Image 1 (tube, rainbow, N blue to C red):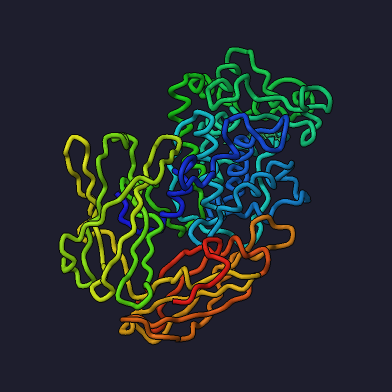
Image 2: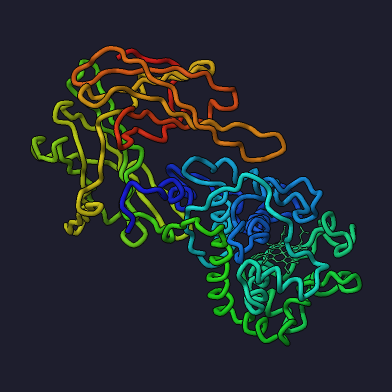
Amino acid sequence: ATTWPSSVDELEDIMYLNTGYRARGFAAPVTPCSFSSEGAGRIAAAEFIRTAFHDMATGNTFLGTGGLDASIIFELGGNQGDNIGPAFPSTLTKLAPFFSSRSSMADIIALGLYAAVRSCSGPAVPFKSGRIDATEAGPVGVPLPQNSLFTFQNQFARVGFNATEMIQVVACGHTLGGVHASNFPQIVPPGSAPDDVVHFDTTTKFDEKIASEFVSGQTKDPLTVGPAKSVGRDSDYRVFSSDGNVTISAMANPTTYTTTCKALLQRMIEVVPSGVPLTDPIVPYEIKPTALQLTLLSGGSKLQFAGEIRVRTTSRPASQIASVDIIYKDRNGASSCGSCKIPTAVKGTAAGFDDSFAFYGFTALLASDTSISSFIVLVTLTSGAKTIYGNGPSGFPLQDQIMLQSPQSCLASNVLTVVAAVRSTSSSGASLDLTLKVPRTGIIPPALQAQSVAMTKGAKVGPYDLYSAKYTLDASQTKNTKFDVSLTGGSVRVADSFKDVGGLGGACVPL
Ligand code: HEM
């Protein structure tokens, strides 16, 4: 199990909170499987999968370069012929809002494949994080329908797939969507098909029909039969028949198809430059603290501790949970707080493709002198059974050395004011660390730009000193800027992190 907090926390939320309370909505553009906000003839799930393939396809595992690195964001515009069609800009536009300092664009593209495949009833492709974004275009070299079999085999070998795996992974991709007349008029002549698109198989589902219809001679795959043949663009035919139909026949079995595609699509999204370490596959937390916030209250003797505990309710439904309690330790790791118990109440439920969650909210007052350093979570079932979630040996950690003072902070006509409370014993100073999204001409995702502003020391309130800083944002940055407040001077970075300017009020309230 992952210990909280972890580098995967943001991606874990994006991956699992599809609908309901605190939904991130990442899978909404590909739900249901047949959906596209772009209108008739388009399938966003197919476009997400094709985008991941094209980003990966120019990698080179011999040299350890490229792969799934988001270099595709620099490779649109059409002059190189690799990325033809509106699928790529549409996909990147839908993915870009999820790009942050905690979720690289390359990870988001890979996660897009997971969501698209799963939304179409395909397997849950294991998703690791840690991909690093390229800073410029990669080489050309996506397989094109006019390429020879020999070229295809070399192109797939370059990204680590042998001749058999090439057949398999093409069959995994070409189960959704199809060929569009506007992109490949020699393959689908304009006006020759409804909505100017011919689908690869007869179902809009992640299934083996692409293989079974090929083997039975029923296929209408436009890269196998039809106009593509006479112009040498029947690439699926060349690929699928390249070993005398042995592999594509095996892929006609539904179980073989699903198992093979799960493994090969995972490998596909794990083609990354050498030296890029990926995490273990992300799995949902059983218990995950959410939106925790300490706030110093007026007078300085009390801290407000508020937040939510997200409980996974997939195998243990929320209806069986009688209570969720927090049991905390004071800032010295002791229990000077007495029972040190904080009750919670249900705030809402959420769901992913395969998991469900309930959020339990709480607000408590703590003595600011003794404060808090960690907590564990006690789940009591209606049967009386109790389970303690300790997050490893030391509990869920919480630092009280620096905290955002949300009520004292505000965003008023683009001017951001941030106030933090810093324990008087803590440090030499505080810093406001912004992650700005800077729009780039002709490139869909913005650049991330780190910006630090020294905070100015103000009044002393109880055991804390207040610090403040101002920063003027561009209009486009008033909704998408994240920021930390951090201590300066220490050897280990201590911060209250990943706050959203969108969460601040329009008027700062003095303490
Ligand atoms: C020999 C290798 C391949 C060739 C030559 C090839 C070629 C093509 C072509 C020409 C299209 C039509 C695009 C359009 O008209 O919009 C297409 C669509 C598609 N390809 Fe491939 N492809 C190959 C391998 C793959 C692989 C390995 C995957 C993913 C695992 C994949 C996923 C897709 C998907 C999902 C679509 C449908 C897109 C849509 O409906 O918008 N392809 N491919």
